[in-house]
Length: 97
Ligand SMILES: C[C@H](O)[C@H](O)[C@H]1CNC2=NC(N)=NC(=O)C2=N1
Image (cartoon, rainbow, N blue to C red; front, side, top):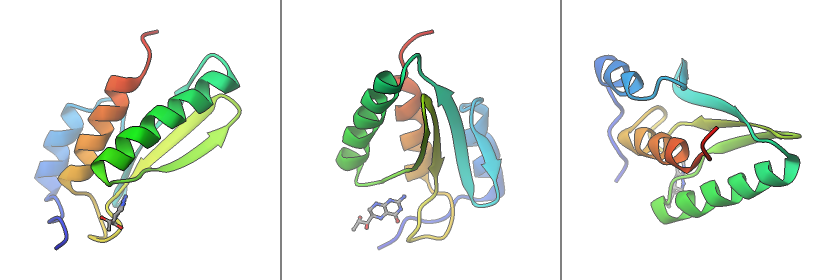
C-alpha cells in the first residue's frame, strides 16, 4: 500500500519547515557541503542508516565534499510525508556549522 501523495498546499506547508530544501517538480532536494571528502562520506553513511531504518531512500549525488540529496517517493510518483520526514532527519543529522 503506497503512501498518498501530498497536495500542493501540504507541500507548501512542509517546505516552510524545510527552508534549505528546494521543490523541483515532484521532488525536493538539498545540497550540503562538508569540510572534507571523508566527512562527506561519513555523513552519507549516517543518512544511509536513517534511510534503512525508515525504509525510504534518497537519491544522493556525491561531488568531492558536496552532497545533493533528492527525495521523492518512487512508488507513489511524487512527494509523500515519508519524504518530509526523511528531509527533517537529514537536517537533524547535519553537523553544526
Ligand atoms: C519495499 C520498500 O518499502 C520499497 O521498495 C521502498 C524502499 N525505499 C524507497 N525509497 C524511495 N525514495 N521511494 C520508494 O518508493 C521506496 N520504496
